[in-house]
Length: 355
Image: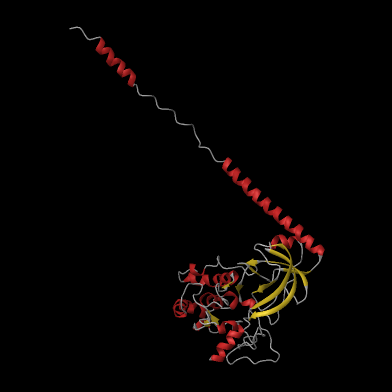
């Protein structure tokens, strides 16, 4: 039991927590989630359950839906919500499942739920979950198998590509035999072209000139790239001109980079953390490219100003074109003849009838 827990701590890069009393991570005890790619969680979860015992009672209502296999990602999504993965880098903000995972589970299973007069629960709403290329989140596709040096047979009752094991080594060693969830056994990174169209559509939040110092595996599903920042062309929050970590929330490092490379990086910030994600742009450093990136940023700002001006113009137009009430205004009511009555009564008093 102790060896299993120690291996799990190694696999999630939590060796530093061993020396801390009351470490917030705990072994997953929810039966539905015991075969997830992670085996350590923390409470409270994303549904605000303070203990796993409370989470078990809540997640049991979805057991029949999981058993009918209405969606291949439903179990993964539920466990990511009820037993979120616990990592050293995100102790205070447990990693949420990606919005796309929630949408797939909802779109697959909601038709079946409606047949029994049920709808997708508001507590599992997809709108508030992070988008993969804009923030930190977890999805089945982001968890791939790093093949070991020698082949390992599938466990009893398992299938090919679903080998389950532990993490070998310490200090960011290679994670082996992690359940692949149907992902490819090697990383296939999409090339992002350095063009104006890419820059305008991606809307990156930071652009820096940096030198790669080290690439470290900080967990089975995380890679940390340490860079030495040389120049800062754009940022949402202050970036020190020192060594800073760039976080990749996947076991695949995309875009793929190596130490000692001098590069221009365009990517996103998430809660003051600098990310390095698949849709980010990393190019070998060239002065010409850096000058082009400055021009692209000017075009992006012009585009934003144009959109804001159009919105203001549309607002003023809608206010000026307020419809006027139709029909003629009502005619004023005639004044009551109070003065005439008073005059006649006064005349009667001044001219009494003769007897």
